[in-house]
Amino acid sequence: MTPSGLVQQALRTALTPLGTVYDAVAVDAPAPYLTIGPDTVTDWSTKTGRGREHRVLVGVWDDAPGLGPAKTLLGAAEQAVLGLSASGGGWRVASVLFVRSFVTRDPDGWSHGVADFRIRTEEI
Image (cartoon, rainbow, N blue to C red):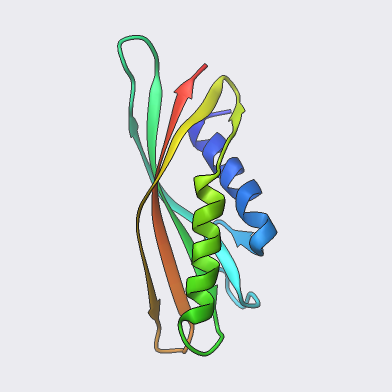
């Protein structure tokens, strides 16, 4: 398993108890739902080992009135991601950091929230 695959699988496992999880915005999916990605992976190696830094966006989508329900779901998603713990394929999640988030409303009336995380993995 690649480090990116490990992070994707760990995120899906952590977020699934909150609702349906997709890898992209779903067409005609019932609200609310969550999305994983996009992500960017960079080197985070040291003199003594290999590592990767993953910048991952987690999204929430809801068609309920107001921004409150999306903010609540995004907060629950943040807590789930911050508790991430996983290993596999010779890699493990070393740390998770919340970077920023926002919630907005689109012209069709959907609320969309995004949280940005920095997840570091290291070879074991």
